Length: 455
Ligand SMILES: Cc1cc2nc3c(=O)[nH]c(=O)nc-3n(C[C@H](O)[C@H](O)[C@H](O)COP(=O)(O)O)c2cc1C
Image 1 (cartoon, protein in one colour):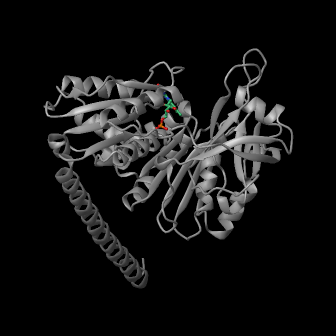
Image 2: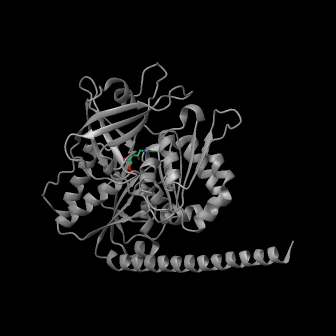
Image 3: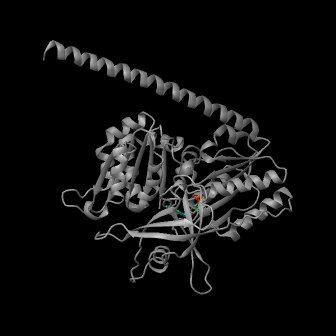
């Protein structure tokens, strides 16, 4: 090695060290500032908790947080001071002084707590606490078609009872958003406040949308058909954010009630239309899934659907100037595409995506290439599970790139995961846990740096 190259290597290393030190200093200052903000908020929460009814929610896809807001409004309207908090904010100090807490908690995964409640479960629910000063009620959200119905809400209720807290009324369970169950809760709230005002908690009206475009995206794929659908509003286009959900009314023949189906939205309001990516579900008897079959096989082009947009706070975008790692598979590209559309800065944006074959399943490939060219997407890695010579899933990409993911997380990146629960999100979670360690991944979940929209 020559002296010059030796010197330049040293200068390079010195520059890197300086850069690293500057970054470490910045990260340290940022984490101190965050810790201070968190502490101030926790103290403020604690000081008000004795006189305020806390409405604490654990929500994965937004319904529990929506009901928490409505609950707090109903209380406030009746003259009762109320405050909405996420379960991730409810700490031991606040629990030690709070007099009344209304818990609204959904269940996700396979009987799991929502991401913004998993820290609460881990930190507090391992054993009973001394909560005899606390009165509480639980609204548990779930879907009885799952094996572990309302499992987290039930566990929360049992833990509160074991902690000697007093139930104000018995736990109420909401099966798949059933309005009658929600009215039951509303009725108890009215009894609690003595209010006779009848708030209308029926879901907001559904708006009419027109099917403007329907394109098969994966002709020749060994997997099920994946369709790109574009709907235009009949009236004004509503506002929504990346990560939000479209709730569609699926008409059912005869007297049976209509079905509701939820889909991740693949576009932004500025696109002028609401876009979805839907896999045509085939049933063992050769029929099609109720929602996808109706939308893809029955609905005519130009036909009308009833939809509403539901906010999904757990899957909100981060500002375009902060780093995002987007991970997903299949039609999970929908939610990720809406996020990609927000990435208008030059901050690192990395998409790791898995599908079956490169030839037939490279969904939105032209768009992704354009985003790469525009540097709105800075890195793209894809795994093709059915391609000879590949055979990898997206979780393998996570494992292979563990070191780079750790580096980006240390610099404050947020990880977004969208797609199927079984296989993909569980596999990705396991790979992230190996890469980052369980504690760091839990910390990312708590701080909102690990956001998921899986189904
Ligand atoms: C991926 C996924 C997994 C779910 N797992 C369960 C479950 O194990 N048990 C249950 O009762 N409900 C389960 N549900 C249903 C939700 O609890 C229900 O839709 C609830 O209304 C969602 O509330 P949230 O939007 O506040 O998260 C699951 C829903 C999804 C999307």
